[in-house]
Length: 200
Image (cartoon, rainbow, N blue to C red; front, side, top):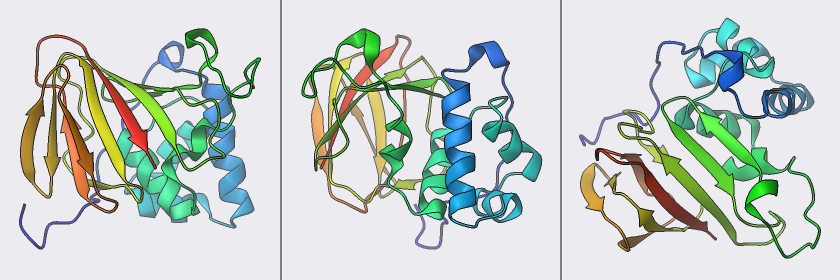
């Protein structure tokens, strides 16, 4: 990656059918309410994300899905951590236990689904299981996470670019990334990939 490459660039809007959305009535209003609370206009948020006002409005109304990069920029512009948007999950039966059927889920454009494994975001540690369909990727631009993270491949393979350098992780491979490391990732394989992300 060249030193003058930008991490966030403008992209065309992507719309999906309403039936393909996961919990559209919770993610959209959460973004909308936070945006209003922060005093950010639709135009200002659209400019930050590099999308049209109409597309941001569609996200807030549950008509369109954000990409991983979209949600990362939205989080940064609104001043919250990237995992903030998992916070509306129904509380588990026990505060320290989660089960597959009651985990908060986010579906992104591009074939990536995230499941929040952690029972709470109140602590310093959070765990996310990501599902990558074949060909799924986070986008062409690098994303900067402001948390240290560890990545462990449970199934399939995942290619990760760190500071522009690609490495392919296969089953049982793992890596640890420092806070602020610019990354992007993609499933270049022919099978679904399942990956565990640990943030602290």
